[in-house]
Amino acid sequence: MESGAGSSMQLFTWEDIGLCTGQGHPQQKQWLVIDRKVYDIGHFYQQHPGGAQIISHYAGQDATDAFTAFHANNALVRKYMSSLLIGELAQDQTSMEPSKNKLLVEDFRELRATIERMGLLNPNGLFFFLIFLQILLLEAASWITLWYFGTSLLPFLISAVLLTTSLTQAGFLQHDLGHLSVFRKPKWNQVVHMFVIGQLMGLSASWWKLTHDQHHAKPNCICKDPDLSMHSTLFTLGKVPSVELGMKKKKFMPCNHQHKYFFDLTWMVSFYIRFFLTYEPLLGVKSLLGFCLLLRVLESIWFILLFFMSHIPMNIDYDKNLDWFSTQLQATCNVDQSLFNDWFTGHQNFQMEHHLFPTMPRYNCWKVASLVKSLCAKHSIEYQCKPLLTAFADIVQ
Image (tube, rainbow, N blue to C red; front, side, top):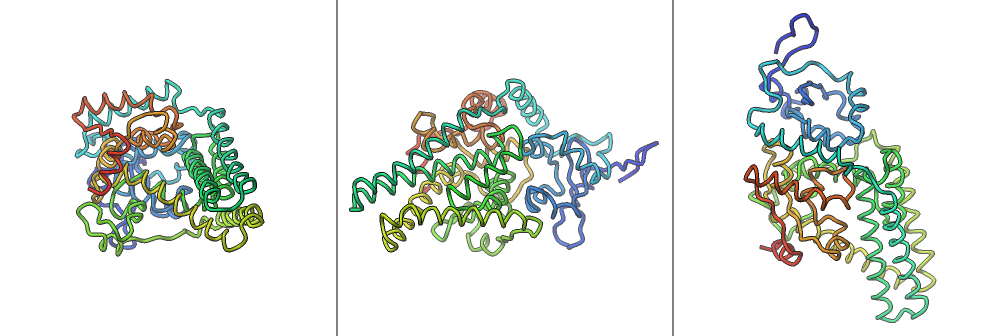
């Protein structure tokens, strides 16, 4: 560590950065690097709008590509970060850790620049309006089935399947909103996201953001990817026993998000009030409870299958601090494109492209797939794409 000539800006080496991970001693520093600039997040991470854990996952590392991937307006965010700036990398230091593949990182950044020039990160409101309309029509069809045909077993099951499909498609829409890919302004995405996941699904937007963004930051990284806890007691993931993973798992909802929890809870309660008022007159209380349980079971199976097929057969390990491209591709795989697969998975069959560019609207993922595949071929990285049934079968292998 040294001071720059004729400047108050301190100069650092990658060795300096690597020592400031915030792990071990409670008072250990937390530094990260973005575009060669060094930021001290030790007193900021608890106030980080995206959650304390996600930014801490990059302490002691280069976070340039993660920063670019998660923030829709990088220039504005940099202004807010100016108070955290403590220096920059010394001139003799590479722009990324020496352990990373410089050519691959540069090629990926050029690929992202190409995608931005093509306008593939810009949302199309009509597409998402049609998705929202589909959700409402499916929910209406579910209620009409019970109202018109009665509550015998067959209408009961058909209604449950229709409403499960509505909930699942709402899950895909809230996923789009959570990734800031529906509206151009992040605030609109955040507000509507809270409504969709709360009122249409009965779930918490804050909980989803805190866990899902961590999953994207460090997919399949033990102790950093909360989604690995979805495995339950039926699976042992990767080379590390599930018991060890469970012992190290920590979950909390930081106090700086309390104001969001009130609105989360309000929307969640409104979902169950609406659900009760809509279906109780048709089913009665006992059948309604069974109906609700069946919905949640079917919905959970649908979502868990989609997550498992894209991630569980892939590499699961501790964080190796790889470049962004390698981090995402070693933890994800695609499923073949078809109209049904696109609909059934909410375009999550393009999981690799989604992980590389999480704010890109899902209907553009297929346009990027050939470019990503070419980059994989250039750098001898496997591009995995499977038939849907094969992806399901690989879960249990």
